[in-house]
Image (spheres, rainbow, N blue to C red):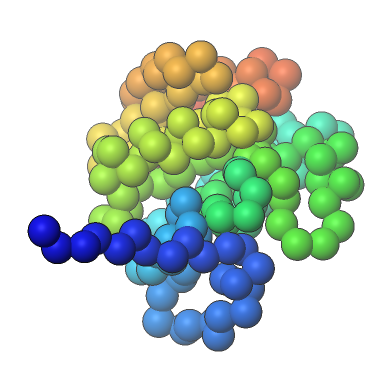
Length: 179
């Protein structure tokens, strides 16, 4: 019988010592280094649009940030949210390193590197470690899927309003987001 060796897990500290690559973005998923393709302009435009919609709703409550690096779990995981909302108190606590725990709202925009399984795993990770809501904004299907801390998901499509409980119950129109 052949011996099987488990891969060595990389820590965030080891990750920080790696040279920065220009060809891909890198994250640390459960101690494994993951290379992600750089986003296309369409992806960045949607990130900017979401940020512009959410910033006024977040005023005085916290900050809306693109590509926010965070450690949902300590030591072996480092990810970046496409768009995130972080409360003012948590933002003020984060001085060095990375945001500890997942942002209160994580918004993911699917790209070719995302599978449905990856998005479900990512949502579960974030919701178990500080997120109140996890959104998947899919321009191809003109929908926004919102998953809450209990694991329930609701799909909002064109003509519907997405309630944002983490921002005081404000709403945003799916049409405005995906048009």
